[in-house]
Length: 255
Image (cartoon, rainbow, N blue to C red; front, side, top):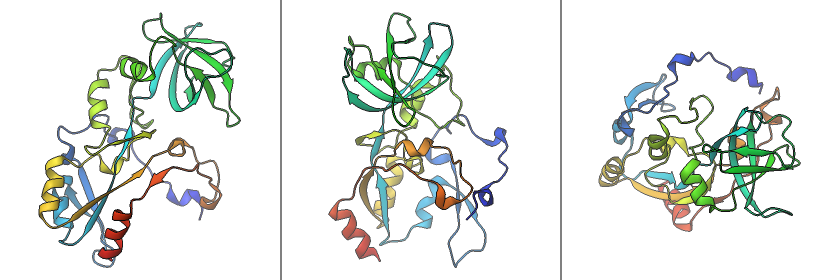
């Protein structure tokens, strides 16, 4: 299957840059195979109307952390850093070292310093991985959680524009996270679930729909550009998951 068959025009002004006031106010398209020949439009709050008693709803409880950092090179150039995995300490490091994707980081050299907002706290480049990503040392005088809490931003998709010091930072931490997020380790949110509210989930259960949970930690492949002509040629990175027996049993019983 050729990649170009999936191309379509999406005007930039139709991409919302902020969420609606309520999670479940977002729009929803429904297409039921063999029943309808074209999509029907709903508000997400109406999703219980599309479910039946005895159905099983599976949710992903992966949690995403504010692992995007904005920093400045000594030359004054701005860089955007997405922390991926803690690889531990390396030779000569004092703080923890992370594998990271860096935007605006061309020709970064080992030992180069990147300054965070206050210009008194910095990161250190420790080279590159075989995948072309950077190794970044975090400040030794802060725990990782403190660095993320103080300077971190949520790793929103690239078509959602955010900037250094952006006022959206606080609301993004709440809204770019599902209400049932429990298991840390995802580098992006499982976005299909962002529209559920706790009240909506409770209504779905009252209507006789069984809700089960699994964990799929969204990995770096979600940011990987497609550079091939055929779908089958695109290679994604693996992702870790936990599929509980209870979840499997519920799916089998529902069939």
